[in-house]
Length: 463
Image 1 (spheres, rainbow, N blue to C red):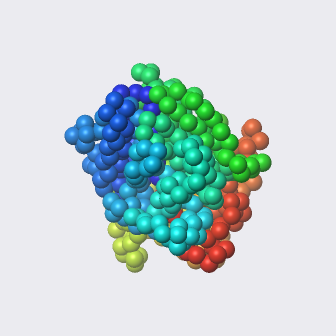
Image 2 (cartoon, rainbow, N blue to C red; image 1 turned 60 degrees about the vertical axis):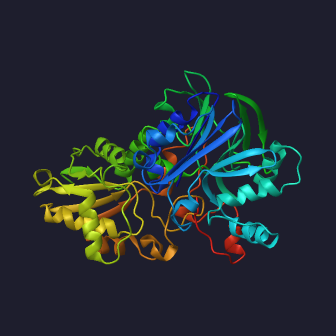
Image 3 (tube, rainbow, N blue to C red; image 1 turned 180 degrees about the horizontal axis):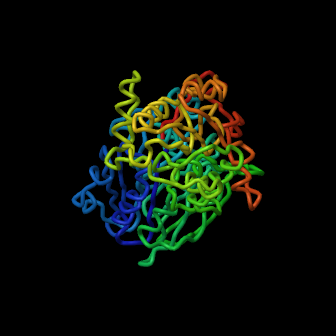
């Protein structure tokens, strides 16, 4: 659940990477960082600070990052823990030069690799799985930087998009399953930008060139692609994460042939076909469900209204124990529009339902605002399994759909009716080109091996 950006071959590399981070703020709010390399002086520089991009990185910090190549990271911490020691980019002095690395995803064999490296004498400075990659590169017996990075990546399992600078050379790699997205764009002022989403290209007026394909390792120098190689492991059918389309990516991003907004509208239209509701108005749980609610309204013929207003000055909310605390959290984020809701049968469209506590509080708020009936619709299937590939999901015991029927969830939420988009309906909306997707959080079908779990080692998302 992190965002990464890199720029090569442009004298304003750090400034452009900084702008890219702004567009990826939705992928993480814990910390932000940028590392640059100045080809003219042979020096590397780095800034890492806690908070939002606008808070963490000031113009004075960017001025300290000269160079024509830079990598940047926006962090959402989960079990890896908060604190600057776990912020990225990771920067180390390496026998081949100055190395800086940023990573989005989650390695499913990180703990096994870490234990092996510790036994061999490696010293770790953080608790993030990304540092494992750095140690694997450093300990590789290969003779060139290309082969050392290839050697390290070939030992990884799970999900990773990685951007690495070795002095003035930029490497971009994506795991063979292609769980997380990564794209390449050409800058109008010269050079290339690589980023998690196309929205980071748009802000710097970069022209989309192509995706980094699953299983690729690309070497870029001076803003030009020098070499494209394939990782040794071959996967016949990549499995990009469908939850990126459901919830995580920004609506204006284009992923795997689909604008996210259009994919979510298609989810909403299919949901209206599969789970019609007797309503006077359709409202969304803003902002991630806006597009799906519009699609539901289009197909059902029920008018779409702005029944909830989201406070955009509230970022990622914290986990609050106790229902009273959760009610307060919802009131911080959302304000009901009484004139829209009062006396109405309200169809509420949300992107997904994870724990259910926030939705339960939200339903209570809608009734307080005068809603006569509340019909809840989810533009994705029941989330029954945790994600081990980079989306922050709770344990299976905490997932409301893992141990309750739809009727039991309906009673818990306190709504007149509850309906989910079917797995088949969801995939039908986004497979025009025959695409396949990872649906593990809905189906429990984990394709990349869960090595740490099989070895009895604790698994968590450390990106």
